[in-house]
Structures are given as structure tokens and as C-alpha cells.
Length: 392
Image 1 (cartoon, rainbow, N blue to C red):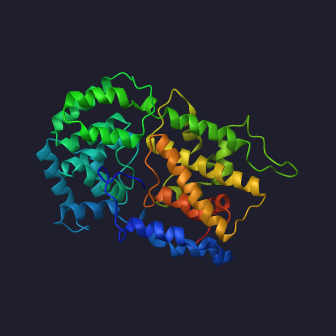
Image 2: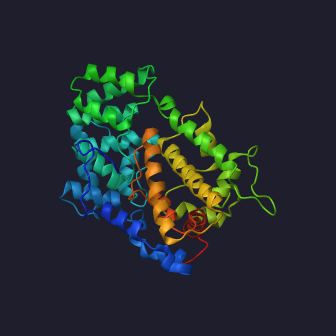
Image 3: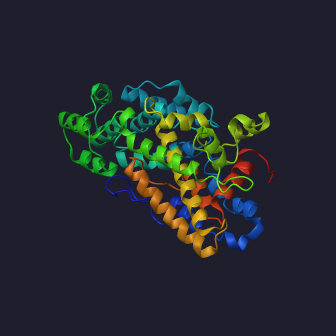
């Protein structure tokens, strides 16, 4: 990841993040031959366990320093006191993070303020907040183009009180969108770092940040373009070289990418998908919402959809260009790095932070990209891990 160290701290080579990256990029799927589908998953089980471990509770216990990770009641009691000291209402959803430890904190856009309030209540500075988002919430911090994220970043950086945070959030909601330029997200973050007055911040916010309806226009346009391209790349059946999905619904394309239709799943498969503890993939309704200009798709759905469409476009174009499905070891490695770099560049262009390999969704995509046939391995992974078609 290419974070500026003044905004988000880099992790050293002994960190879990670097371990995950090294393990993923050094796997040799060719030598695993036919056992790749099963053995590789087991070899990297410790990575998947990031989504099964109680990483949130581990992070809270580590930050508080005086409670055990298993003592959720003690943690909640300490958190309640911290919230009260800051004058913040402790929401029912946040209490559930401790009383229902099998339920991870929601990282959807609608609940993002809960995440920032939690870090603020626990007296985290902006760098610690960023690290907690990445390691404990397993999501991306500080999308500076988003007005909410920008307000929290500025206020945490400046040490503003909770009343000021609420005031600035209210003021941000009233702003009309005046930004007609495409700013690089991290440049906005660096500029906010230099702002020291609330009036200057609000003025900058109006001219450089967006409400949710407008901030992801670039991402929506890129996703819509990928959808059109990908519909023309779907392999055909019988003697047809390609399926013509141009007039078909987006659900047909999503099924071609993921290998299943959600509406066609059996009850046991839906149950397994819900209970497997793995990150969700975009559904039919999500993709339709992404490209509908009048709708405000969530940060999470937009980012996942862009990554997924890029993944399919990159590797289907390779298959078409080389006229082969399987790659050799050298090609796998070279293409993996190209895909990783191109995806990161496009994420930055669209206002998203780059791929983070401790984020379970990002890990799954890069893991499948490091294989002889990435698209098929993604579909196999979903069949085995999500739909429960193989018992280990």
C-alpha cells in the first residue's frame, strides 16, 4: 500500500500484514498441481482465520491494556465509561459488538460513524484510528473525499471535542457540491493535515470533498464501462465463441464471474453462505444499484464491485489474448503483480484506498489471482468455502 507515512503509519516487516503479503505472493500453485484447490486453502488457513478470529476484541483488549480478550463484560464496562466521559451516547449496535462476539462490527457506510466514534471515545489519534480500522475493523480508513470521513480525520487530528464534531458533521450535510475537479484522495488528506481552523476546513470541504451521491461518480462510470466490456468477454456455449450478454441483466454477468446465481441457490447453500463468516460478494441488486445514477451505493459495495469487475476483465482479456486458460509459473507471478498494481491505481483514481491484504475480501481476490486460472479458482473457492460443496 502506498500510504503517506504522515497520515497512516507503515507496518514493519514483522507485522501480520507483511506476513500475509509475503505468503500470498510466494505461493507456487504450479508445484501443488491437482491438490491446489484444497491444500493451498489449508496452508493459508491462518490468513482466512483473520475473518474467524475475534480481531475486533483482540484490538480493543490490546488498546485498553488492562483487560483480557475473553472478558467482554469488562471491556464493555470500560468502553461505556469512556463514552460517558466524552458525552457520547453508546448505541445498541456498539454494545452488540461485545455482547454478541460472533457478530463483527458493521463496516457499511450507514454505520461508519459508529466506527469513528468508537476510536474517538477511546482517545485514539488519527494514526492509531487508521491502524485500528485496518487491523481490527478490517476495513479501509479515512476516505478523505467523503465528507464524514474528512470531518472525523480533521477533528481527531485537531483534538476537537465531540460537540464540535457533531457541529461540523451537520455543517457538512448542508454544503452544496461545488467540486468540479478530480482530486487525488491522499492529496486531500495531506491538505487537511495543514488546516488549523474550523472555518478554513469547512471552506476546503465544500470545494474538495463530496456528498455520497457525487463523490463516487468516477467509480460508477468505471464500473459501468467494465460491465459493458465484461459482457462481451463471457465465454460462449457450444460453437459460439462468446455469449452476447449485452442485452441481458447484470445478474447474468455476475453469475458468469462468480459461478452461481444467488436466486438459484438452495436453502442449505444460502444458510452456509450466511454462516461461513467470510466477506460478502456483490449481489445482483448491488450491481444494479452501483450503476444507477440516482442511487447512493455504499462505499463497501462500490469498492468490491470495482475490484471484482477489474479482476474478471483483466484475466478474461489475458485468456482471450493468449488463447489459453492456464498460465505457467512465470506468467502467474508477472500477471499477479500487474493486476495488483493496476487495481491499486484504479482504486486511487476512484477515491478508494488501495488493496489491503489483511482485508478478507482483498485477500481472496489476490489469492485467486495467484493461480493458473484465476477466474475458475475464484469460482471453486466460492463453491467450497461459501456454498459448502466440499467438507475439509
